[in-house]
Image (cartoon, rainbow, N blue to C red; front, side, top):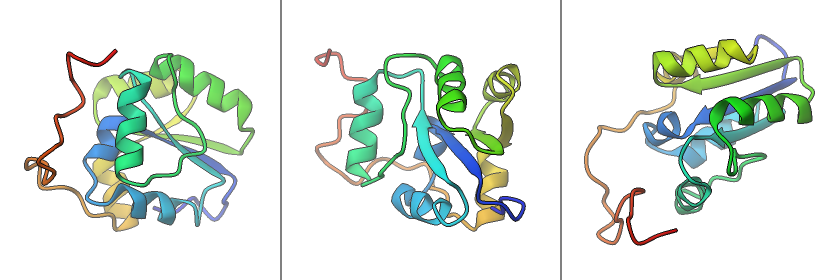
Length: 139
């Protein structure tokens, strides 16, 4: 994905968009070449985002914490003063959220194709201990 010649960009991935990529760590490392800041936002609880990013060794500059995507994007936009703020998502709701807070929106298919990022095949996790993100026994 080309940042339009400027690296003065903040890039936010919705967690589901990041999950659809074969190697999230490689994606973040690549994005750091043409962005200033990169992170993850989600409606999911903080521990879900943290578990995913740790498992995939993703070092993020920001994450949504205990707030929703819209509020997170607003806060990130205020905290990280770059020329562009781009949100990578997966659904029409993600597009609407981005537009509502004055962020650019790119769907994950377009972003992955433009940047040469491999997508997952949608199969089950290779980790036999992975119980998914929706555990009932976790706070």
